[in-house]
Image (cartoon, rainbow, N blue to C red; front, side):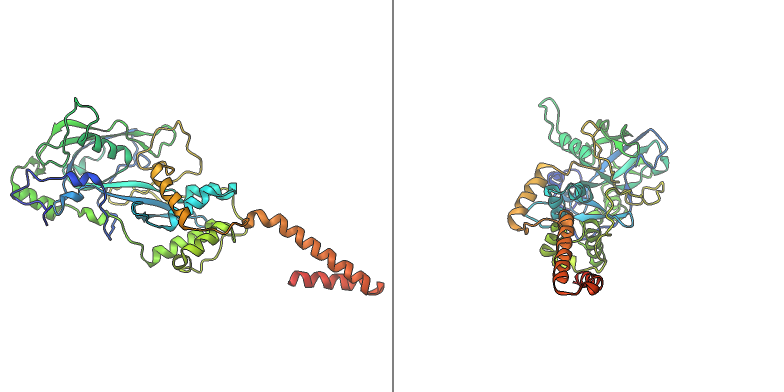
Length: 396
């Protein structure tokens, strides 16, 4: 592979394509992840020192980007992370479409469901942990660093600085790549979330560490990156298997009110997904508010650190959280506007708004039967006929 590392190019490879973040593959395994979560740590500040490393099999894929949604089943209050395709190229996806339908709904109840289908970008790169003040046992280990938009922007600004007085630096350069100071504090509005604003690339550099020392041996470095490092592409975009498709369909049925026009639109546009489950519709006693219960948390960096959702709407004054984005961004809006042009939704009132009308129609039908009965039957039989007529209407 032309972009692979070798002894001859290990000090002068070109990693420019890595910063485009358009790499996706068909596998995803959540292991060897390094993402300190403030909700799991008993510290107010988490600091560590990281060295970004290139993906040796193809340096253009040294940064993996994918979009995720944490989809919760409202009846079990449990959720899983769903991989979503990137928005480029007019990709259609039921999660994106459901979000758009909720956002544009005239029903406040359905509009509030946008949070269920919100998505966010996640990035993955190979790093070596030079120091970790909270978990010193991780020193010199190779991990897959999972990060969000805040750190990603710092990477891009380091590669392409906005100021002419700053020098560009390739963080994947094995000799001259700057070390990254991870400095995470607790978010004042949500202590379980981290604030990544203080993270930065330092002027300090380091060669890869092997056997406790900086190493200049090309063959040993290649062995480290190819044979000893976790495979970065295992964390790239994962196609949905049959179980995932069924889970998505079941969650959608249980999230939307029965017979709502939004649900019917999804059934029409994505029949293969929506017929994959017999899970049934949402409960008739539709809950206006839901309390999400998180899975039991353990202090480990070898499991996926899934972003958590909140029932409360984010205040605009809240500090930005690294692992969640504002889903109402321009890219997503442009994609949804294009989807609207392709998808025609039948313009009718949802079942939520028609409940009162159905009750009125039912009452009028009873009155009509009663008047007819009184005109044609004897007075002695009137009570029985009135009762039978109402039973007939109910059976209809």
